[in-house]
Amino acid sequence: MPKMKSKRGLMKRIKVTKKGKVMRTQGYTSHLATHKSQKQKRKLRKTKEMHPSDVKRVKSLISN
Image 1 (tube, one colour):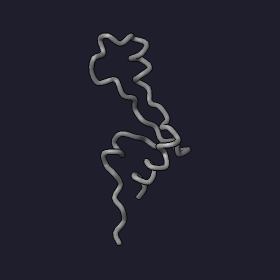
Image 2 (cartoon, rainbow, N blue to C red; image 1 turned 60 degrees about the vertical axis):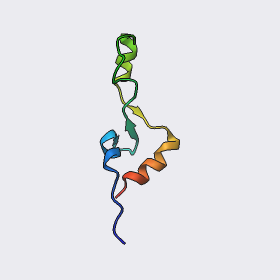
Image 3 (cartoon, one colour; image 1 turned 180 degrees about the vertical axis):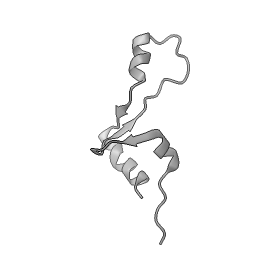
């Protein structure tokens, strides 16, 4: 049986740190930015750690 391919779309959206944390970018950034405060937009630029309930599923999708 051949190896499972990793989900390339997911690989483009997340990064795995050296310690194994899965980092993701935040949503609510692509449009309608004029009514959001500068503080909110600044905080949305940063990456966040993925929720622990999602990490197990995501790691199975990206493992080779």
